Image (cartoon, rainbow, N blue to C red):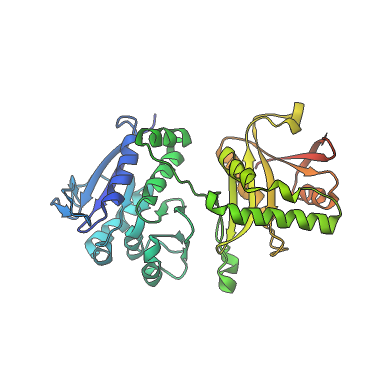
Length: 374
């Protein structure tokens, strides 16, 4: 039986109201009527504090009598810029983090975590208007991520500004109780969850150009860059291999819009530049026929830029996809490859994919591959 987790939401003078209320409500609504989360507020003293917007709230507990938090929420706000220098608060955060299961900073709550010495070697983020300030006080070993709603370092989860705290809190709920619980919460709150996924920073290459490969769900705002990437790939295959694997005119805006809306589509960015795209399908696909089974995720429309040839983006994206599929409870990663492309077929076999069959369509053929996820 799951224990009830204590969720403490820190408060201080000039804290941002939504930084408090958003995560508070996410955990309260998803608490299964209090059976899974016990959510409460805590301040340095049990006395009223004023939010940035002027609402006065009294914390339920002080730092001295607060129940031991399993999850600590550290919100941001204008007041964080001064309160981060409050040694009493930062010391309590540091001590609480040592025993907590998860610490979630929202917006400039990241400043508290930096002052509490919790960010060494981590991926970190905050409000877009506070990156410079965070950069000044964060350890040099930390890597600031600017193109995400949130980052997950295990114990330390950090979100971007204000409403991104809703998204990060939902992510934590999904991590603990599954995505269905998080989605049920969004339905009750009538909130659209903006999910992000991210891949590890390339720590071996940070001194050279501070590379960071990010993977997240594709958005409509990515459509133009995606279209360019797919058309360039189609042109390159035609010119270098002498056959048509993808038709350039297939990647219309209408097609890509439906592609994003109807599938789990992901993009990969390197320092803000789009370098890859793919989707993961879960339902029956005609191409697999009798070979279909539902213990797999099917990677489709995988494309990577030619600009960084030799950087192994393809294998890195597939490794990430395997982790994503595994987290969905599936054991196999599947993909197909045009049979007329021997180089690409050899590449997939070199990555440990097993040839399972061949599909012959009208004017084209594909080899079918799968790999068990370790």
